Image 1 (spheres, rainbow, N blue to C red):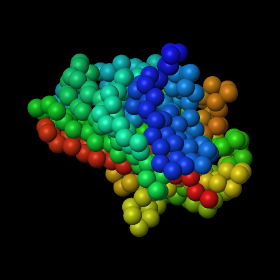
Image 2: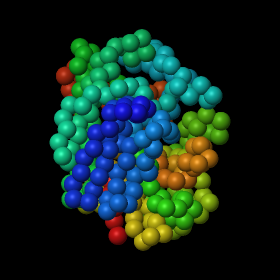
Image 3: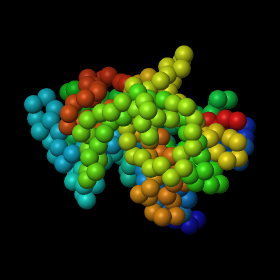
Length: 305
């Protein structure tokens, strides 16, 4: 068997739905329905690019200088975005995850962060990918295995597929009241801005065109079930959609303009996040997870017509 950069390929199916979850990073590499891509995949013979489909633990987005404080102690983690002097997307993107369960329509991946100098805590993370009649459901459970409280946040990095075209050919509907404004050099927060009436206002479905963005949004509109939705309309008349439950107050939207040229604008990064960028440094929305305690978050994706 040829070498596969993302490791084991765990396939699940239900009716016309198909998904593949991978060992490296515990990512969802692809998800299709009726043969149509719902999430933009990365190739089986390539490394994951742009964090496609990966869980982001124990923080999503950027951490300035890789530095944070917790309970009076200061910590330094590796700068995984060295050009901007940031640490980005936690510790588990390139780690091998274990398969904790695998059924026809469900796979459960797990990883444990053991104590190290930048994060002297023990955190177990379990991500369940399950197909049901409403689409793909992704549930993340984090448990503190240690004997002291730890800082925790999470996110994930799926890209809604533009189908056969580019985002330029798609429409977008997404309602949020507030955008987190970031600086140009390091993409770190410098303030907030009301979305209504700006170029970032997609509360009424409209064309994306050449519009480019890579920003987190909050104060999102939710349905009666507490879900916020990102809906990408495609030229074939279908919609690729992501929902996030109320444990995710933030959604980052990224049009993929900084990916490799052949990958740019093929999908819309629609990233559920429990906290804003740089939250490990500011403490905003960081979960204090006590010894033995667990926390659960959920999001999902579907094809709509």
